[in-house]
Image 1 (tube, rainbow, N blue to C red):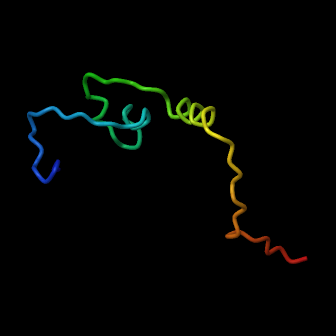
Image 2 (cartoon, rainbow, N blue to C red):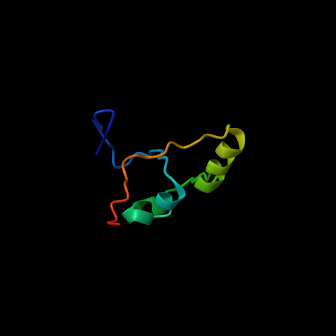
Length: 72
């Protein structure tokens, strides 16, 4: 594995940003469980709710990619 084109040193420490699911070993990322100095931030849902709270309402577009093809 490389960082900025250079091979990662096995005895070095690296900072990694990940969501809570991956940081807890989900999705096959078991080595993340062994990490140290973990700093947890807000959960994904909390961040999404905060974004909606401070953003203007938007009208989602009506998708034209799906059509009802049921024979009548």
